[in-house]
Length: 252
Image (cartoon, rainbow, N blue to C red; front, side, top):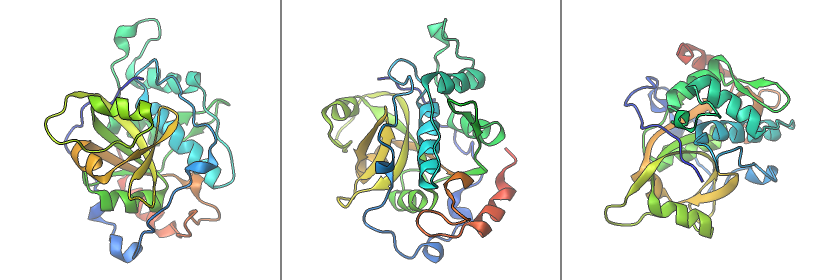
């Protein structure tokens, strides 16, 4: 498995979710369990076992879920995902030295301006993106519940790869841990046990709130109209006004 998120740049995303969205007013109570990951039978590896394209594989996974939630389908291939990785970063499949990973803000801007390419040649854009407070599990839960997915950047500890391989949750270990690199995952839900559910390397993986607090170095929530049905989200929120508000934050 490959990592491929570049280190977080402080305040690279100038608009913060908490600056304009009053969580208690919008969402009085978040269910203990939420998420729609079971709508997708196979998210797919999308080359992330061979190349550090986790930011782009995550974008594809998010888009697949948004579309399915609204009753449509978006199919991605390793080729379509790598085409965006190449266009955005200069990655050359014939030159492994160009596999240098991706800056999350740069990828988010690309997704807003250009959109990610699916296997049929269709591009999928996000309307806006804003930053979450780093390592705040309550805000993460609210954002994932309202918007369907949150892109989370992790300073990925060595031991977490073993936990993934063993099918165990990513849990916090005390003491100084070796950081293997940066990794991007799509947070899409939460279980009754309190663990977040994330999509990574084509599978659903659990992550404890403590792990998120320690190892998150950036998190972005995107607004995609593709998960709305008649202007309403899968959880029943009418996001028309929020969509209008977010137009002010699409300049980057």
